[in-house]
Image (cartoon, rainbow, N blue to C red; front, side, top):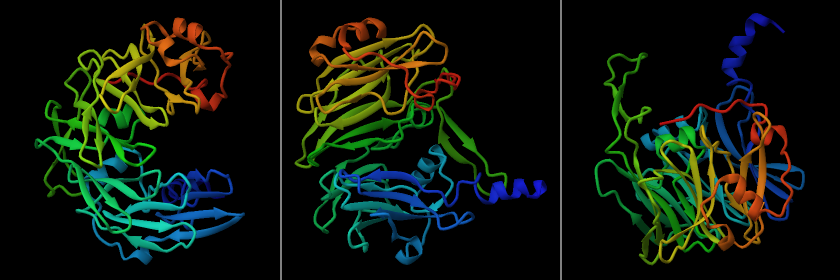
Length: 383
């Protein structure tokens, strides 16, 4: 190998990442898997593939869709925060049984039947960002011009679930600090039955405005962005339950003390969210009642420096046990902790250690090194 050619090769292959499969989703029976991959080590156009019975099948290639045009600005920002440098199909969403998948190419929404492999265009209100298929595979939610919409895959209803009520308000997308520093890249989540959505409303008006010029094109006007520098005002984030029947319920928690929404999901037990204080020393895990918006404290974790946020947590098992993490006594390590007691036994706000001792009946064991960053230094705090 010519060592002098290595920098060029590294750039042309995007750090040797092109052509590698990624973004895997397994079927419930474990026999099939969806994934993304380009078709060569220097090809930047992503395609959607299916692995079935040991055989790979191409489900969607952008050039066969005729999906030419610009990428919507909101999608461009989302990709930038996700460090996504490719083109074509860069993300997708599938139903619980892996029968249908949806994806966007240059703002146009597409769906594909994984058994037949024939993509079709889904009607929308305009260019889409971050489409998410409901678990039943009947409808898809997406963001268009700051509003959260739902389209039925059979070409039926087009619903506007929530529209911006101000020039700096956006529904259904993660704000800057969540996407960049909290591992939360999403802003809307389906209920298991596909009848309601948990959605974030983000008001960027308090956030300081910055202007970014294009050094490659000095004639291009600088682009304004809202960036919350450390110590300045953050975006105002609230969470709402939106029903297909028009129901709207706002989740209630102490937003004055806990302004960061670090995580959210909707499992079989209802909405589950993580909120953090501005000084990042206290993290609370809350269960929410989608009918009333009331929240219940399941766990509180404190740290004299800051609470480390671990991707994939909090979560709950099928039985409702709360799964979270806690720092271990060894430097750079952490424990996986599961609360097998009923959630009502863990509502008292206590430190992470006391809550784990009181509510955990599983031995706390050290996870693999690549799971909790045992060999990785703690990231710098934000905001």
